[in-house]
Amino acid sequence: MSNWQHGFYKLSTEERRARLSAARHLSTADQQLLSDGSSTLGNQLVENYLTDYRLPEGVGLNLLVNGQEYQVPMAVEEPSVIAAASNGAQRVARSGGFQAARQERALVGQVVLVPADGETDSELAWLRDHRDDLLRVANEAHPSMKRRGGGAKDVRFRTPGHFISVDLSIDVCQAMGANSVNTMAEAVGHWLTDHGFNVLTAILSNYATESLQTVECRVDFVNLATAKMAGEKVARRMAQLSDLAQVDPYRAATHNKGIMNGIDAVMVASGNDWRAIEAGAHAYAVKDGQYRGLSTWQIDGDQLIGRLTLPLPVGVVGGSIGLNPLTKANYRISGIETAEELAAVTASVGLAQNLAAVRALASSGIQAGHMKLQYRSLAVSVGATADEVPQVTKKLAKLDHVDRSVAKQVLSEIRKD
Ligand code: HMG
Image 1 (cartoon, rainbow, N blue to C red):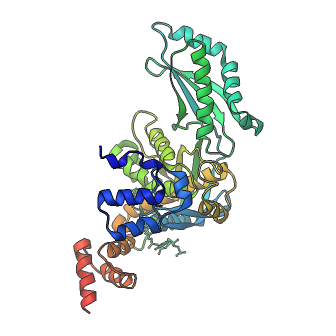
Image 2 (cartoon, rainbow, N blue to C red; image 1 turned 90 degrees about the vertical axis):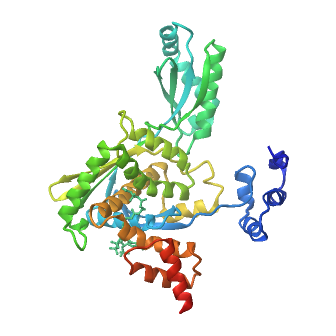
């Protein structure tokens, strides 16, 4: 290991950048880039801080959820995601909007024990006899949660493999709550150790099956039509694509990626832990042993019905939410005030996103719409200036085949002209 890394974390941000620049022979331009993007807040949030890595933020439009209209900030680097979310949401709004059930919200704090040989049943019996103590210990570790009306409400016992899992069901009120749950689970773990149990770990589970959010929509065929395909045909092909995602994990993974395009973007812009949401979503997608699409699309009369259920243990306080002024501004833009509302809106964005992608796949294919919007990033990637980008994208849109080398050629032709 190179010696310059030792104690790197103890340096100031400027010293870190200087040390790294010397070791990695960074150009003056790269050094300037790092220093220009640096912020005081960033240095307070992560370790070995160098600079802020920025994502573009846009706003998803036309979202009608439980009769209320929302404009939702979305942070994502991929072209066409925000356009697709707005497009899908508009089609749903024209047919009455999304219906999102009110979410039951609890996190699971897992305390895992390794029972002594042949003692699983007796240890389980002891645990069942002491369930009130387990809840008391958990709540004493975080009394403010209980004062706010939340806290540990229930405890269940499972036996995955040869382990015993003590699953605390914890209401974290409006918070993301990971730290609180870990504190409570660890307190229970210590208490069980003191009572002679072999505790392997105590930690929040991201498989948040007690924070499931369901959203539904009904879309009239007419709102699915394209210039070249009738709405009914699009709807029937979308339903087939949905069936495919239920039986083929290769397709299901891409189907779910489309849903997470929207969900992750809302999670980032609302300051939530999108890695936790991703982990929970994919675990839920394989809940019955086969990985499946998280949403389904089915024909009912002259409508296409969409349904999406996934764990959304989101928060509107805690984590970095209160620290980042842009995150706070994003809540003012969306008008979202509660965790329940955020979960309902986020799931709706996911289903809108899925609708737009699956509709495109069922009709003209993804490239027609998606690539049109990719042209701008393609133009930038081959070196087009802000003035040249519109000219390059206009020319690319007229071509049948577009790739990097074509974009380079188009740019050089424009420059010659
Ligand atoms: P279009 O048919 O050209 O849209 O769609 P339109 O001109 O009919 O406009 C309708 C509405 O769409 C607009 O309403 C906007 O809300 C929105 P209006 O303003 O006219 O009242 N809209 C836009 N919003 C912002 N910027 C734009 C824009 N264009 C339309 N430029 C579109 C074009 C790309 C939206 C459509 O073709 C589409 O939704 N395609 C799907 C794109 C997609 O899913 N992209 C994600 C990346 S691909 C991927 O990662 C996932 C995937 O693999 C998942 C899967 O396989 O399931 C596809």
